[in-house]
Length: 530
Image (cartoon, rainbow, N blue to C red; front, side, top):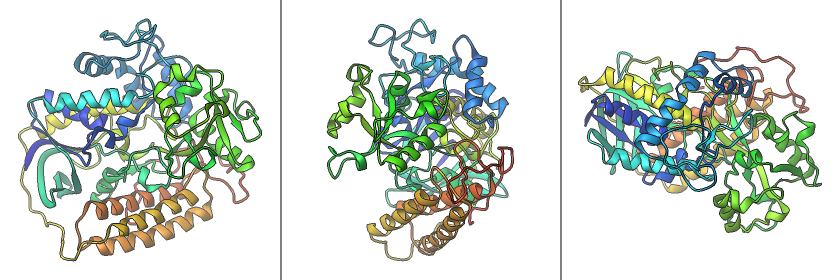
């Protein structure tokens, strides 16, 4: 197969890149592992999408403050200055997303003025600026996006397909090898955009959908692209925790409890009923995510349980989707929602510029797999959909200009597939080992010795996986390889960097590292095999 622009991934960043490239007249091929919209993390996004209102400098200041003052000022300026225009163009005018309006219901207006919408506030935001649809915004954005692309001339979507490796020729990316319907084939492209999402499957507990195995980060790193800020793995403070819920069934599954719930007044209490966040930060429950997540983790360790108290809200009226999830799991809302931090978002990734260009010619990246510099050491709530949209559009436009009419076939060696397939339990067992290692040693707080232990274990695990992957081709074995590579990149970057934002390096006794945050450890390209 050939295409002017190959897009790998079908979340909001991939969809935005495909739309923008098609608008420029490019022939676009979208390859995605997903078979349903809910397979993409964008579909799971609850809170909403932050948009600049009357004070853009305030929005930019909130992003920088949440980042522990490590965000790239130029990247922040790009995000903030383009937010209104891109949301109005793509989400309102093109997709006609009906965000919640003032007074209830939905609104089909083509303006993002505060007077038209029921704007929410979340942690780290100094004002209300978040467009949302109840607490399930992602689904109301991604599903019409996919429908629009499916009906658009110039865009082909191949689902249930796995990108295995990038095709390179003398430092230039010429497409990727794809596994679809049990067969491996090359896709030659004039330009390639990675939009593969995050690394949730590297951890035992994550808010990501299954399949978030760091594919784009690993493929890019293995091809020689620069990868940066991998130590900055954000943990969401409030994921429902069935382990400490006496009402939960044995098979109850966790789910994200949107930051918007705290934005409307919910409070965090430990097992003794004590509200602890006012003693931790002046913004209490609305402190930056990394601060709240560490406080929740410590309160759970200290007292055994933390709940989100929603008694001061009309929770069922304001958050009906979340109330339904609680009801499905038998949560006693009067007693509070049991919560615990859970891996949520990779702030680093494949290093890109303001147009989504990577260090490799003709390779672009957008969304969670990309390190744009916007988030620095910690992401501000409800900026992930916006970042994916802004950089997806910019990457798609530039990729179309670079790749239109320039797809060339190059020589490549197809992967060996000479040995018998492995049982399903093989990958499950290895992922279990991976998740336990990352949760224990590369989690919400890290120690130097723990990171050393993690790197040693991860190298051994990757060596085992590589030995099997050399002669076998399957989605599970390549996902496992990618997850091991991504985990190693996180562990090595964490070992080389001082504490900042969501990378919290502590002494063995639990006291936080005293060294002040600086630029050390940022912009590094760790070896993919270490």
